[in-house]
Image 1 (cartoon, helix red, strand yellow):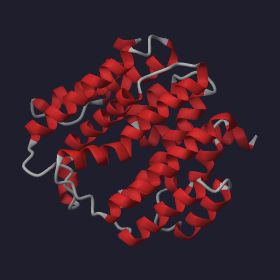
Image 2 (spheres, rainbow, N blue to C red):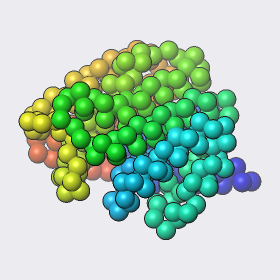
Image 3 (spheres, one colour):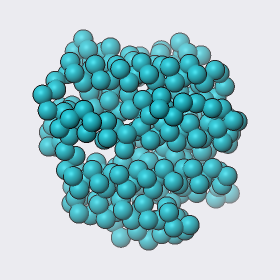
Length: 269
């Protein structure tokens, strides 16, 4: 019965935290659905720590490094509980329940998912320590890899685990990187208000749009290689929404409406 509650809570939390990814994850077949939902929620949990508006950077670094250590320890669940429990008044629910999202993952793919959670937490801690300083395109590539490009790599490993689907890991990085670049474009005003600038020196919207479109073009090639099946069904939805959002931003808009999202998703069915 406890497992059933985790299933319900995981999908409910997913719906609360991601309009973009709830739809494609919810449509996945059993087994794959749990793996991707677990991975997404775990990574969202640590992303909320990195982006927290009031946590001191020193505490963020300590928590993120702690998550890295926990997921490399062989006792991720208990260590994560001990790490996060003292901060119940500060952290959002999705972060505090990191142990539950980790438990939701099918046991045969936990080595993949846990390895990437540890890797992302470590690199996020490094970015907090560096003050998210991005001066060059290489810096931007580094940041977008840390928070999204490696998600593409992880998904490729999950596709292979599930049904042997092979994919290009370099293109997988561009898939994640392109989606993150869309977020950077969309959240530009809010990021600057909190004192973070993800644009390299001298860049404006023109340069960031070019960077985003270049990565999304590679992402198009990534999903073409998937040749059907649940991996393609999953990837084509966020990629379609990313292209539509970039087109909207390029003409002065910012965020797709709920109706627009549903219409785009239905066009892929």
